[in-house]
Length: 421
Ligand code: PLP
Image (tube, rainbow, N blue to C red; front, side, top):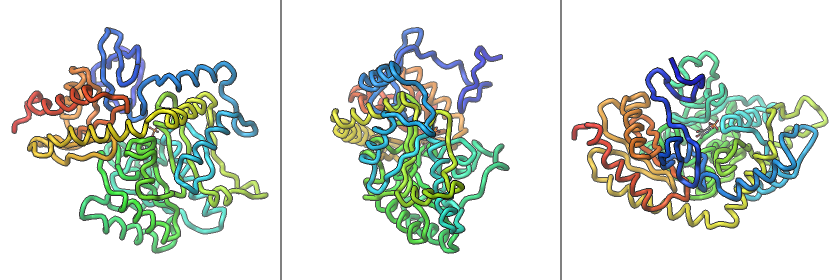
């Protein structure tokens, strides 16, 4: 029987060991109750951007608790949300003028889908189909699962999921097929939106595609009269090399979802930004055209203050230079694996690096996944491969020496785990 009443996320309790207990976090490091140090090479599920417990963000949280806690956000307002909304409009691609706060990446996607459908309904246009990319991941709530890839993760919940149009992932050689599929999906006039993870498919395998293709996909969706939604929950806040991935395609989406690095990863918060046109479609004397969404903790003042402090860190510290240096450092260390027959598909996008271990049994449930995780953890490294796909997404404060320890461990892993050459 389990030693703890906790039911953990994405954890098969019957086979997984009791996890280390973390008592302290600082920069790129976590410290356990028995004094071990663990290098957080996945930014605690991709949230921690500058490093754990950035002083400016911690101070903002502490100071805000002196005067505010949760305040209902329908009918009342507060300065942390007002100031953050203004900052987000300033920082995100042009044209995104309205900000709706929620509390996780999944809910930011749910909000985006509801905004898109509300937009067309309020305009009296019968569009309600959503197109998504094969292999996508947008979260684990019912709507977010519906627009994500189907598989072992959601097989049990399939009866609750709605149908969407799926376009191929634009892998090399399939770019035009993906663009054609958007055009085909839009032909009957029912397509409300194309929703994509820009430049990198995250949980779907850290698969990358070029900015030009992203731009073409958006163009095809708009040519069909549909909205273009960018799920920047993972890619936002510098991960792909720019503040938001869409910038690399000089693209302003109609709706943009952000979470994870929004507060520097310190505390939950999400935002869905939309154009004036989408907001105005909900602006009416007719109350039935209201955007009917809320959650109890919408625009939590402490989380908004943390996000404002994060914006301040981007403004006051050389974060862009750190991101560029980390991207270069990862690319240079990945190069040694290009000609290593034990690995395949060596790739990177900004600060995200990934490569596949050649194994006979590939796939998310492949035994190699937990073995790799245990191998890295025994070396004091927090790495959570997606099956045989090893990826690194460290916070931007990681040092060259720390990266060396990660890449040396990756090089040792196949032999240490007895994978025959
Ligand atoms: N969208 C993308 C692209 C993500 O990578 C994730 C989480 O990894 C989500 C949405 C869901 O975010 P959350 O886990 O905060 O609900």
